[in-house]
Length: 328
Ligand code: AQP
Image 1 (spheres, rainbow, N blue to C red):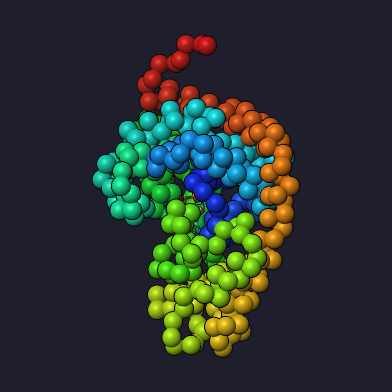
Image 2: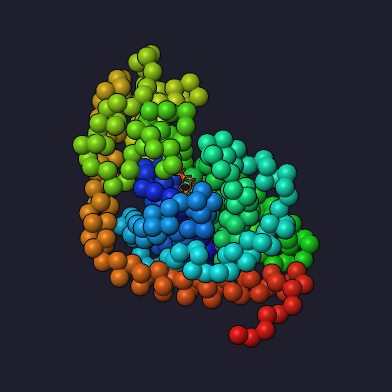
């Protein structure tokens, strides 16, 4: 069975972009793939979060993954920092990736422009991400469009390491959904919806239905009052079409044919989103009352993940010329 790996940062409340761009596909893959999913708390450290908040967000992210439908009997679910191999292989990845390659990452440019303090970790983030992926001999990485550049760099790193030291890593491919790959902020449709922007245009997965409806009603569109799909010239309307298409399993172009005015498009998009979110909210409320069960799932997942990660790390260490570790 082909292996799928993906991760999500515990950097705050999950939003519609995370759900449509990534998590829904994660759920789908677990039925016919060997699926490994991870809450990447080491990545969240790049922006120095408050420790208590990071702990809470990590557990909340795990609860959210279970609520959207990740089944711990089918998938391996764990927290990145519980498997020490991620940090160790990340160093080898940093020694394999070029400074110039990291400098070209657009996400680093965006995030560093918005930050007062820019950590070295924010810059080398794609090396840690490559470690996450390569440790599991991953074939496919389901992600939103914003991660395309990072996964392409991960492939380059794997190929370079393999050329330098002999076959060590599986070279993975990304899978990006056709609709929902880039959910934009409802107030600033030129920016992607993001946890850290704290915008009134972000729709949280746990948000109350009335609030979701209000946000769609107030979504920024344009003044030509024509419904058609063109993200470049009509970013606001195209975002609504993309969201409705993704929520209903259609294409944005075919959804556009059903509408002549913005009002009904906004109302139907809000309704479809609320339908998608309401069972997730209910499951989340149930699960959050049992933190012991979430901790148990994560511990079992980490044990399973560690077995695979340790074997890959040993192969990488050996091929790169590091001497075997003395037995503990
Ligand atoms: N707006 C989006 N549209 C589609 N997919 C998205 N993803 C994130 N935003 C959108 C996908 O969600 C997965 C998890 O992302 P992440 O939280 O690990 O990191 P991120 O891409 O940096 O997400 P955010 O919300 O923007 O978080 P912050 O603000 O903390 O940086 C990924 O597969 C991503 O593609």
